[in-house]
Length: 553
Image (tube, rainbow, N blue to C red; front, side):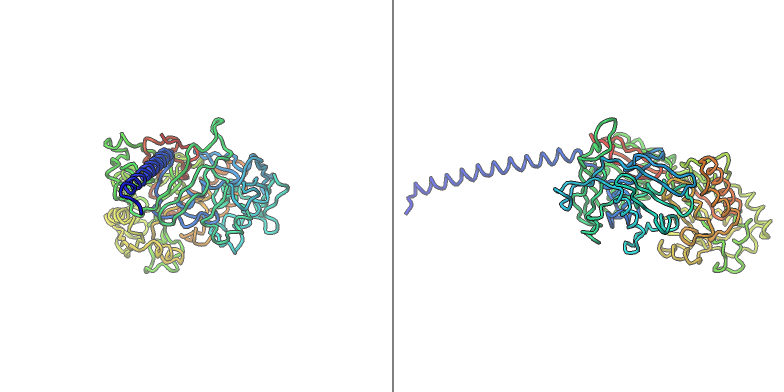
């Protein structure tokens, strides 16, 4: 039996031990929280409202995938912010005189991220055989990569890829294709390790192992994705090891308005693009940041390799309207002259973008030249004259022309509709889901449609390929078939001299303008709102999210 005094002493001891234990746990929690808070200060946070379906570079099709893959992997070559080609996994390369053989010398200090499947669980060195495997995997039907097109019609059928030794990789083409080096900057061509990919199979999409500046840590699909610093990354910034950040945290908030509010509260470090829900809160009509936000954020803008346009179906066999007037060139030209691009940029886009008055190929590319390629501007009198020449004075006799668009672009399409109606061109908006519109375009059932084209790689060929008659839809949604254009297209692919090739590109663009195959609307701009705590992340024309040189205060 225990006496009352002993019981009290026992209870007191228990309470003392409990207090000590509670104190130690509290100190531990505070310490952990402090560490967490300190480490969070060097974590870059952004939101991907569209989600990320895969971290496998073979499926890096959309911007959300591309951004993540770009942080986890490297390609043979890369572009800098000025779109100048730079070494990456390949430190140098040579192209044969006939343009058919590309030979790359690989760096010997690049390693895959540490993984238990590698010897001693340490990342192994990248070899030329890894490049062969990665490229062949893109072509393998079993992979079902949407990037198959980058190689399928370009590389030699017998021996497209070779590892001459561990350090030398070679690619053979079946015919010259001068933008090939640009193709090799695409995330589809990121280098993977065969043993890792085969081990995970279809689950590799959420178990990525690359060579990039950040390593995979955690992915709670639909909630968050965390990447951490690759301590063994090979690139340096003036001798200082990259990356500067300790990690990246990606959220998946679907609501653009909620994403915007999170950014305003400082819970996100940058906001990409402008949504209709908040564009007027951040930007003036001239495209400048409103003064109310100047203390907390910076606005970055640069050329974006994205052309917004209206397309005509040049093959009118499935036009869907009687005596299709759009087969008449003067009518198509009248539409090009019949509305004000400047007003679209100012009033509907708050100054974001530039009116597309210099052709289809956008500014931001080295071949772009406003003096050599003259496009369309707002000239309603010229439009009226062209309608008379086409046999439709003041639009009399023109049937109603359906313009297919989505809800996102309904305001813009409505503005164009109103101005075209004023000069006698009766346009009716057909607002449909984007997937249905693409289906109509692919089946030649949309006679007049809104479209956009974002460059897959920074070369005008990526745009002009849309009008080569040998291509189906996509990309040739207009079913353009012009023998002179096709001739110039092939001549450009065989041209070694860049300036000579650019001149051919300009001649091709002039043909598209003269024939009025499309209605160029505007050249887009990359827009980023960035916290003042962040430095080193100015935008680039491909709108890649490059974080390896980013610093956070």
